[in-house]
Length: 624
Image 1 (tube, rainbow, N blue to C red):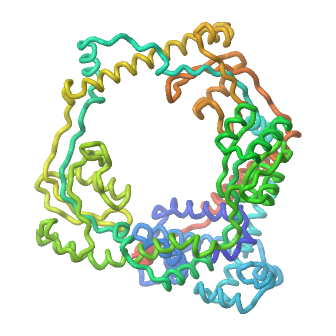
Image 2: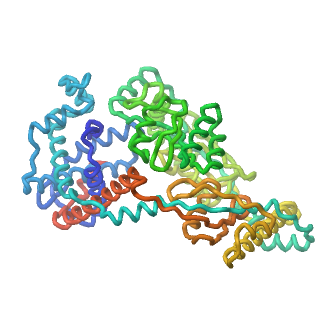
Image 3: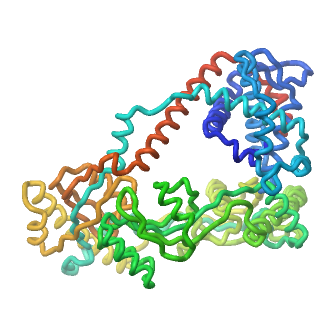
């Protein structure tokens, strides 16, 4: 489907409904199948109406062509593409039946206007009939087929739009979610580092040996297996495949014709509640302060610093902020700009214009795609010869050198690591490594080498030469490590005990400052925290704990270097009038969710009413 043609005609409701139909098709699967034992080319029936195999094959071929631009799909992927193609055709048949009963029509004038407004068919902002024909030809579409599909899509949008129209979120629900998301909480923390605790006296040898015996998992060496391995993989062969400038240019021309990316911006943003502090932060930033320096200064002034990558304008939380970011000069500090939560100061670090990127930006990606396609062809040519050689019991180290094989020999554990704990040098990626390790640890010594199908169209074969069982390392070998682990445990327990004492004191009615002072530890205030923003000064895991506390209550939790104790100091609930953009965003998200639920209910009704039957043998012919 030429989905990129319709960027100006996209409707999220239609996309959601289409996705639901695809899922429902998967659930229909073979459970609602009625095998049609005949020579008919009818691959499915919808409410008694036949769907011809050729119709599904056309849709399948379109989707397969798109998939082949990235890699060569294996049979499982082709089956999924075929399922999706059949679901598209089934969906359209269901829609056509309903639209006919409801007399849903698309006026020719509206259809003409929609097609002529598609940017891919325009020259200098005006519809170009010659370009229209040329683009369709390049994508193997006839004009009649494209117009028919466009007309069907417009009718479908009318149907789904009517089903979901008028569905909206009630105001009390919007208010509840706004309060949940916008509420901020202030807190104070005490950081108790394990390394800062007084070191315990050196333990006795008996204590260390007892610790070693009680923690065998810390000092056990894993099981190891020694193997000889050969790999036949497109991913391994691809980097050696040559790519000519003509091949690269042809791939770019095809990709650019199908690529119409939206404009995006990457930006570093400060949200500053106090306008005067915003002015100071902006001045320091403009004077040459680095982003890490500005982040530290922002935290000290109660501001929030975030970094966003490749965001579209409508993805920013404020329309005003999004417009300002897209109007700003890249690599220059802008602001302060007034917003619902104070003022914004920001710097655009990357600006990507709309449309297809230049060849230079895609050259590496396209080169890798071409190399992978060539490597896949080479693997397809060599795999039978490798299989024949192994069937003839040719040892792995005597296989012909012209079969594109990569040979590896060594020892590894069940995690794919060598004797020194580093990853075994197995080429081909993490998925292939995992498949090889799994096969190796399921094999037995003496098993003949067999060619095994791996992930991503790869193959491998191996022989298992030895097995070393797991064992606990002798105490003498790990004595230094045992002593260090025992000491670290003691320091951590001391830090935990001090944190628990402070928390207990506060929760028993004491003051946080006094409890910390009694322990000789400083109290540090942290910037106000909301549920949706990244916290500053505390780990992310502390946020749900903080929002479970009542004012004056304390809690403790582990930190990377010890333990934290935090006490809630205040709760702020902003008014909806102070954040109209956020309220509007919440309302929009709720409306979409409710409309999706409505569409899903409608789909369930269709599923119950329409009788779909599939011929599995005929369907399998599509992708095999």
